[in-house]
Length: 116
Ligand code: SF4
Ligand code: SF4
Image 1 (cartoon, rainbow, N blue to C red):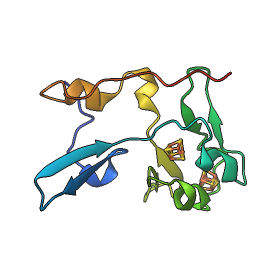
Image 2 (cartoon, rainbow, N blue to C red):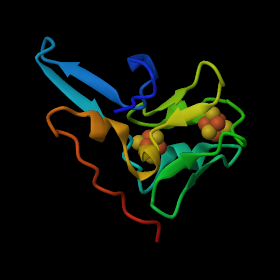
Image 3 (cartoon, rainbow, N blue to C red):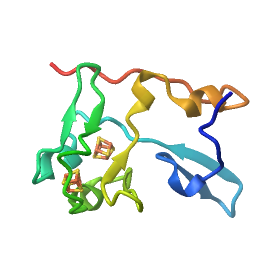
Image 4 (cartoon, rainbow, N blue to C red):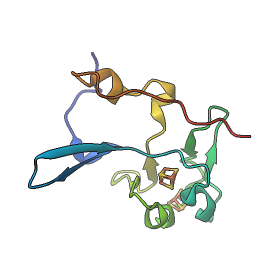
């Protein structure tokens, strides 16, 4: 499986939370929120929901202000240190690599609600 050539957890678009003295490890991913704060606060209108219901960032429109990073309640938007643009989980165009790579099958893609 091609995992894009490297192990860089700091660049992952999901987060692993560790709790209870490191006994529990829980992946946290973007909820593709129905009322997406990140989308609502973007001054450049760079964040939109696509036809599949996925909240996506248009890198060409993003001005790198970081407002979406501050407003996501679960810290799922990050600034790319190279491009200085916002990035978030966009479900790898419907086929998430994290789901493919999980050795125990613990991750499953449950598709977000389509935009109504
Ligand atoms: S980045 Fe945060 S606010 Fe935006 S859709 Fe995902 S979880 Fe919701
Ligand atoms: S960093 Fe980009 S996507 Fe986020 S609020 Fe600013 S312009 Fe919008």
